[in-house]
Length: 247
Image (cartoon, rainbow, N blue to C red):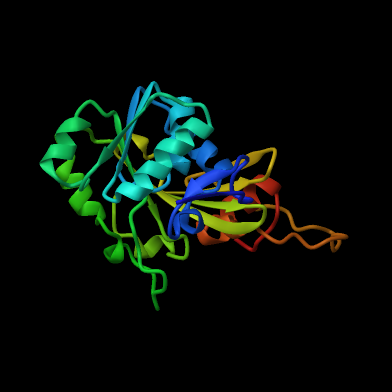
């Protein structure tokens, strides 16, 4: 275990192994925590605690679960670094009945599952623990689930009834979150996150017919954000900007 400075975090954090490499950037974790604000939330694969700490800022109580004791110790220390004291840390297998019983009052289950460092084709089947396994284990706890998944996956490769939210950070595709049950707001969404603001675009926005063509070439080229492209929301973006895409 060591304490380091990372551009992902506003404060030096405790880490071990590849903890910081796979940790969610603080600004992204804060956005996600705001969206998942609730009474009690269980982060069942909390790692070094970057996301759990942000959940603690928005929720009354948080459970941080991890099977690795050293990572969990880092998470506990990072909670101290950020001054939050409403996280209960649990070491164990998130799918075990013993752990499920300890978080039985959770309103939302969040999971950032392990995945292969490299894959020829990113897919949900390689997530561990798998999404169906988590939902089955916690089906009597809640119907509200959120999962992080590889953002390289296009929407059509995600064969679940969920919202697929692609997020970019400073112009780079960064995260994909899948929202299930009452957390689902639409089929596809894109969040464009900057250091001091964000905007959100979702599927289902009606595209007005007969958008007039521009009568001259604009003075600049508009390059859509990668989160918008990945979420396949170019039509909705065009409608919002009143751009003719030949639809």
